[in-house]
Length: 638
Image (cartoon, one colour):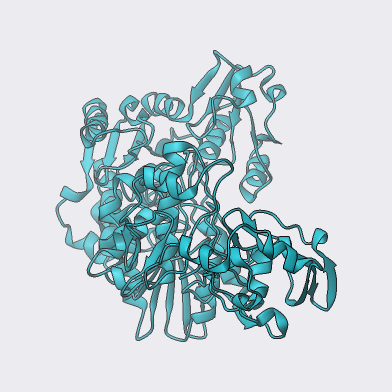
């Protein structure tokens, strides 16, 4: 049979592709770009293509996909009627052979790896398909004495519900805790899937209910408590297959000496500083990983960089994450990894930050990063001897691993500011050095006497860079030219637009239009009249957070979205104006950033309007680059 995999580079897809290739099928697959795993697949005889095209499925008898592949994928569209899901194919294979299927909310990869390696060490011929690698023990393979019927060990994923199709000879259940709310709408749905798999198995091993066996316990004593449970389950599989306790105990130390990649994987251990990566993304798993990191952190700071995995999980388990961080000294939260999900209100990183910030034990230690890179920059710049940094999560936070290996110093970046009244500055060490400009551009803007600018704080340079204004007017209306980094630019070259310009350097000087007095005289109101029209803002704020979208007002949208009175930490939305954040007692820059994201999301999900920040540096993009340009200065900032 000719079988094609759409998205073959995924760990589960790659394992199944090799499993089918080893069973005599002609297997091909495609992925977006080359990776070490696609190179390995080619070496196993799987033909790998790159990009997605309907031509890839020509002649294929079957096309295998995962829920992560869109139904609009050209290969899926072209293969209508020939498409099946990875979990369905693997479940069918498991039901047709001598099989051990390892399922559970946590520990599946580790337990199935221990099981496969243990049975190999005990002399069995083993075939496996596992969702993780351990050194040179790849995601799939077949080893052991030739001529013997192999036992198939698989990691049985429940995330898409296909676990209910498994009919395993031996089903290992590591544990069962509600997860994958994108598929299972209630805990009852989730547990029911396991119940079906249990009923259909010939034998069931419940890892958490196994009795202690002294010989085995001694052999795995060096493991963390949760991994001792995983290893005990692997030993139980061997026992029920007729292997002697003595031989099992003898083989176990070597079998469990290495955990699968990203299961508390030490990326760096030098100069007294340790960096560890762990795949944990459910609160229970995370708590175990933090406990392990605490155990190796002697006298230094335990710093956790965490990236949530999927909006649905973040939203469903929102109140459970803070407890995972109790033993950490510092927690940096990174933007949620979407996987194949669309953004979901309540599942944003800002929602998680707000939940943790409100927790009595986690609140004081949590901060918010605009990207994984920004979080790493902070960790790298603040790490000292004795510190342990834990990279936690199942998303693209793993892309920080090469940075941990290279250990290069993140560069500093000079940012010119005026008074800084409209520049959001992170409470992380981002490498941004803020330098106050000098010269005429550093003069208070109020010195110009422009009526419509009355009451707006900031320097002239800041006003110019952000094209500040009010009541339908802006500073650019009275500018002739601007001196930037020693070069004069005509106003028309500055790219002035609503609350922005394309000026990227230091503003040093400016010239007003020749008819400045005439423009001032004809603006309609005096400076005192404009000032009277402006509301008196409360202490702790300097103005608006978001720009007005075309044809509407940010304040109106935010008010309609119910933003007045919202609070994160010490920052809250003013009850008099929904586009104003007040820095109350104990407010931090992370509070401001999180509250801004929540406000932005409320408007986005209710009205489909994506508000743009008026505050400089307040990059609210989903995966915003840490080096996003900051403005020199402007009118509105706490």
